[in-house]
Structure formats: C-alpha cells, structure tokens
Length: 272
Length: 337
Image (cartoon, rainbow over all chains, first blue to last red; front, side):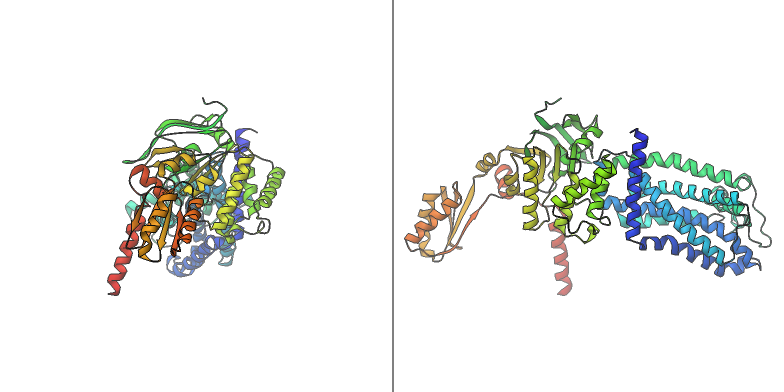
C-alpha cells in the first residue's frame, strides 16, 4: 500500500471511531443542532423587527447566510474539545505508538466533525425554511453554496485541532475553543450589514472570512446581501463582489497554514 | 547496532524538563525473551524512559534501539515491533472491546477480516467475552486494563512495554495481569515492565533496575538486590515484657545479625535470610519455652527498604500529594473550629 492510501485508510478508521462515539452519545449532536436553531429563532424574531426596516421577512432571508457561516465556523470548537478529550483520555498515546500516519488522527477528527456539522446544516436549513428562508438560485449555485460552507467548516476544524492540542485540558479547551469564535463571528456581516459597523470594526469585518462565507452563501442561495435598513449603504469592495472566490481562498489558505501546524503539534504533543 | 540477542538497548538517555533532569544518563539492556523490571517511585523517570523507547518522546541526548531498530532514526519500524500498554488504560470508552481491538488491528495495517478475527481471539483470551459487545465505559478498572493490555498484543509484537500495568488494580486484577505477562514470557516475548512494587518485579522479571531522580541506582537479579537490601525482617511482639530477653535470644539464633528490641512496643526485630522457615523456627522455639506471642510477622523488603538502603532516603511520593492533603485537612480543621 502506498503511504497516501495507507494514510487515507487510517483516517477512515479514525473517522469511523469518532462517528461511533457520536452515535453512542447522541447528546453530542444536541449542541451542534440546537445552538443554530436557537440562533435562527432568536435573531429572526428578536432582531428581525428592528433590523428589518419594517420587512422582518427580508431580514430573516438575510440572516440565514450569516447563521450558516457562524455554524460552520463553530465547527472548530467541536474539534478543539474532541482533540483535548482524546489527549486527556490517553488514547492519543496509543495512536502515537502505532505505525500509522501522523495526519490520520487529525484527518479522522476533522472529517467526523465535518459530518456532525453537516447534520447541523440540514437541521438549520429546515428551520430556515420554517421561518421563511428560500433558495432563490439555481440548483448548481445552491450546491456550490453548501460546498463553500463545508470547505470553511473543514478549514476551521484544523485551527480547532491546533487549539485543542495546545489547551492542555478539556476544561481549558471548552472555553478556549468557543471564546474566540464570538468576536470572529459577530464582527462580520453574519447578523448585521458590515457597512453599519464603526470604522476599525468595519475594516476587520470587510476582510473577515466569516463575512466572506456569509456573503458567499447569500449570493449563491440568491438571498439579499443586506437587510432593508434605511441609510445603510450596500456593502461593496473586492471581498464583497467576489465573495465566493474570496471565501474559497480563505478556506484553502487556512488549511494550507493550519493543517501542517496541527500535524507538527501532534508529533510533539504529550498526553497529560 | 545491537545484536539480535539484545531486544532493547538504551545508551546514556538524557531528558530535561526546564531545570529538572527527568533522565540523567540512563543505560539499559534487555536480552531477547527476557523481562526487565524498571523499579522506582513516582517521578523517578520510569515513564520518561518508557516514552522514549516507544517513540512517544525524543531524548535530549543518548541513543536507543528496540527490536534492532533505531528509536530516533526509524521510529515507524520500532512502532511496528512494539506493543505499549500505558499507565492509564488507553481504550475508547464509547467503543466495545471488540471495536477497540478491531480499530487497533486496522491501524496496524491488518485487513478487516484479520482485525475482526484477532479482536475475537484476544477478547476470549482476556476473559472479556461476555462484555465484548458492550461499550467499555461500563467495565471495571480491571477489565479496562485487560482490554488495554490486549490492545498492546494485537499485532503479536516481539517487544511489549508495560507502564505500571497493575497500579490501581485490586489483588485479583493484579494476579490476572501477572498471569498474562507470564504467558507472554513463555511465548518468547521481550517485556519491559515498570512498577512501584518490588514484589511485582520479583514475581515477573528476570532482572531489575532501580532508578531514582533520573539515575540508575542499582540493577541485577531480584536476589542480588534483596541481598543488598538485607532480605526479610522477622518481627515478634511478646505478650509479656518479661519475655523479651528470651525472644531476643530465639531471634538471634534464627536470624542473621543482631536483633533490635523495642521495650515500649514489646517488639523484637531481626533480619532473616530463610524467610518463612525462620518464622516457623522462631515460633517453634518460643512455643517450646511456653512464651506467649502477641503478634508475629515477616516483612518482605519493600521499595522503601530498597531506597532506604540504596540511597539513604525513603522513596519520595508525588510531591504535591501529601503537602496538598495536609493543607486541606488543616484548613478544614480551622474552618470547623
């Protein structure tokens, strides 16, 4: 067997192991599904009235792209906790003492987390349909829209893996995995148009990958790029006009940087 | 490059963490098919040695070979030849015994069918058949440890490394584990075993190495070490203090060296070479003189005795534990007063 085929086979075994874990503990799915549902309902009905400029149904269509982006971004937190958990339980020592590919454990973890996020996306889409969200674009664009989301979720997972290995304990991982997600997802166009933000935040939001993912999915699902609030200009600039392309560049860059870092960290990390 | 008669060899291993030297020049050699017991208190460097030999940790300096492969230059070849069972049972608690072993088999590169067959075989051998299809979360500590040990043997490795395989097990679990290790040795496997119990190393190992603060302080067979420590101690507590001189005389005859007398506890102690024979002989003599015995005991040398005689200090426990407990207790007392 070639090294690559062996690596994939090992990655597949670890993915199977992680998904078996989820199947035996369905409560692990709760966080991944309930949280986005909660966000859809809260934002749609709490903010929809004031931010929708009298058209809450338009805000809800705008909102869905943002919540999709937030959900796939939060994928990193699950990877963080999963890695920290495996380290604490000592099973990583067993894996590291086996003649297996160094990347397989990480690949198996990110792949399984992506599957969980996929379940979250399906539940959320159904929830979105209930509050009035519709895909207004072609079938091909819609597929590309979901592909962009999955790619970003996968990319974020590698950042999460690195944090999980650096955290040292599950308790630290639990806060470290989530806390940085809030500024990253809120200082973006996920819930408000980025043009409504004050200056330093706006510059961050303009180039924030979460903005790119939210805007790309709005564009590819045929949803409005900004809610109909008076006196808030439509966003423009290169990242907005090329949202899909920019979001793919972001995801690929994150993978190219963080996957090798995570593998290097995995080689060195000592189980606590 | 060591010859094929040597399964494990380490030369001058050094590993430092900050200012602590976890390993300070450890040499080690295990002939093929033999068991080496690595003995020492917590923090002595046992686990660090194990982690270096199993490729989990790189030493700062020094070299090591396992099953003919250089640990640093060819870690993958080492991993293919070894099985590791760690201090904490490294099993996935959400997978069943069969699934855990299947997974390990697949990761060793075995086919699906081979992995399944091997998992079944090991589950039966390790007495886990009934629990084989339940998630290991519900297993007892002993069952988990057996499963972990089984995981180390999936690929029938020629060298097995066991890091404190019986720590935290009940006596029954300890005996079971000893039995498995005995079988491995019969099958010709080379075993590196770390333990805190002299008795365990005595039972299982061909030779022992005692380490303390990252240094090898003694090595040899169990008998050699015991001779250094001074063998066993016979202790007799007389019912009547008036009998103490007679007890002392009796013990001087069966023991080696001068007995010590503790008048307050009415206790006489002496080193003995003959163990239980000396105990019985002493009791016989006392009985024939109608001397009533309150308590009689034979103490095997413990790790503490080894340390006391080798280093002049008692084996240190985990430093944070006793201090911490004392602190808490003191606080509680303060709060209730």
